[in-house]
Image (cartoon, rainbow, N blue to C red):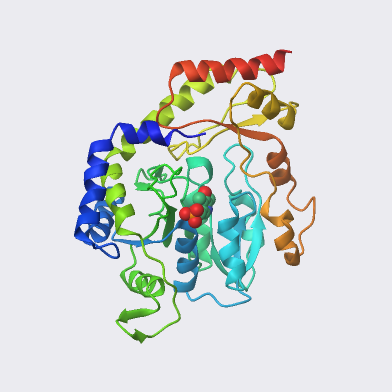
Length: 371
Ligand SMILES: *Cc1c(COP(=O)(O)O)cnc(C)c1O
């Protein structure tokens, strides 16, 4: 699904030097590269604070901790997401209230947001799924009315731009109260292991987030709150420092590949190519097709027999996962989410795609449908 080796080969020398510098310095924990990268990412995102941490899941957990959410508090979030978004809520004793997504963007359906808000609601966690922003303007409008913080899960959408109706543009993850991202190798800005970061423009909250990520301390051995240990490795920061200047070029390579797929597949019967939201650019972390009357398993098996990998993000929605049955959801509660899990398929997209590979993939999809 990705070509990490090909991407590495184009920046090999810079990456190798950067990694070697860390090894030679011996500063493996909180070396200067970590704070340098944080500042560089702040500048890229035009956000006041970037707090690096160990992975995207931790970023989400630390955010909910820093907001002071308490067991029993309700959080509105989609079920059509990676488990991490909801897992951290469960770990903190929070109660996820699942919201449907729109069939066009796969992001939360804002028309249902207000009806899910109760006196217990304490936060909204939209997920910018597959690389484009949820309808943040409307989410913020409702959040402001009810005085709710918004935590953006932007693990898949780093680099995407969101434009408000007044023309203001902001980077994904810098729109709400807090933004969370992951530097997992296959993410759009991936390191060579685990990594993550938290963004905010709120300086008080930034202090709290830093404390939460560092054993609840701001002064060594003074643990004012209960925290966790979540650091970005210096080695990973060294890799990310090299890759960040390439992020926009990576995003446009993904967009070019997506355009090529769309041109080739948009008239194929039974295939619905991805729509771009009106107010967000798309970082195309995934290129996800909707199937209309085409067997998901059959298509995947056929493509696999031709050596073409595919994936489903995600085959079982969170509300129907065994480990989350205690929440009391059942089949049919989120029909659209359930439909999408069974009628979407993601095909390879990355920074190293070329027309030949894409022709082969599209040809195989057409072969399956026409035969
Ligand atoms: C990848 C991902 C995460 C978790 O990131 P990790 O770094 O793997 O912990 C969270 N949410 C979404 C939507 C993701 O895609």
